[in-house]
Image (cartoon, rainbow over all chains, first blue to last red; front, side, top):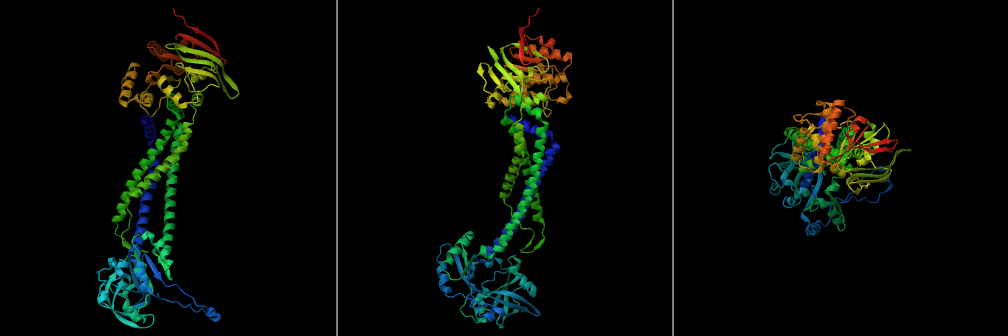
Length: 406
Length: 225
């Protein structure tokens, strides 16, 4: 093997400029892969983690039921009657709690409403929760600015508002009085007990937590719930478990994956696009490697012939040129990884307010060594793939034909 | 004892038969010169003797072992250990220093780098190239290049050196110097087979084989006064 490495390195070093260009090509692909994957996965994982923490892993909610419609209702477009409640929810909660995979279950009453503060008003989603049960089924407390969840128990007219809801109403501290308007027209003067910030814009901009009993009373729906939320041990089993629950629950059982399937599909498309870009960069660099090795083979025909005459076999010749590809791949991966690391450091140091689907201060990066391992694997794969054909061509040369042609 | 033995060797390239049933054997320690006009088939014969090319028909024996041309690894091994080649064009690798060029077959053989380097130094010194070991090929003359090629052929102490027109590119002074080196190597026991079209040089060998149109025209020992 020494002789192979000895010759391969010498040949590479002789073509310094082309070798450097090839290595830079691979480095660009590798660093692009690391940085883009890190950004993309960072964003996606952050989003998913927040969703998993804040949202129920599995949710039971009423099915939209349509009564048989008369022709005139079809013509006038009357809305189907929705049975927005879960009957027998107490037994259902007890039954679900018995499952060993379940960590906690909590009932909710969800409704629409409007919050008013002075001249400002804001349409909101009202979540009536049981402050004792809720922490077992979601870790909403993690996102509360002042950790005052239990205030909803002691102060029945207390509310917890999303930071963006608060911002719209000019509320940034607990203690403010707001007017809550229910869909049935009834109003209630409520006090802000806390604010919550999940980082997910559409949640922070709409959600308001209130004691379930207060909401039931406001909506004149005593004892009713229209959502049961379930927290489980392994979030990845949510879809399977939801299907298992569905077999005995006569309501709609929805896993977090199903609830957020649109986002997850977008992430898949996003991943595909990113990896296609990286694939294109690595393909271009692979052509660079192919080019340099093919040129070396064509120019070094008589050197290959003399190596064969002095006892190098076809396998040695194949390995010499494959080794050149391997060295370019390893060097490219090494430099690319360093550049990727430096770029990650730089991006992390930028304290930029990112506002979109999620809101963060600075970029959220996924910094796992796995990305570097994948990058090394991909760069080596492409480098070896690109060097195989020219190497094979070199190994099949007939030394006698070359000597005769001189 | 025979180093190389050829029995009924025929070689065709396309429709043309370039070797027409050659029987030839080379004894250990012999200095054999093969002469012939251009296109007579002498180089083709040398490539077959050096196990670089396979005959269309016939058998080759190397140190008594019948050569199987389908076993490429074994052929490479024999070329590395037992045969040293010197060509008309030196075929030195430009990326390497003179020392590294000479070391290459030894490193392929599995010799340690230090050991190979020491042996290469010795050989280059003995061929009058001491002090130039770290130079590149473009920094030395044609005669010196050919001496480096001879050192490279000698590094694994082969049983035979096969030289294809080794003086074809040299002036008369350098040609004679190469011949003196060959004679000296031969005196130390290495078999030499040299292909040339220069009769004057060929007559410095011990035996002369003349090839014409792919067949042996004459095979005679050279008597010296």
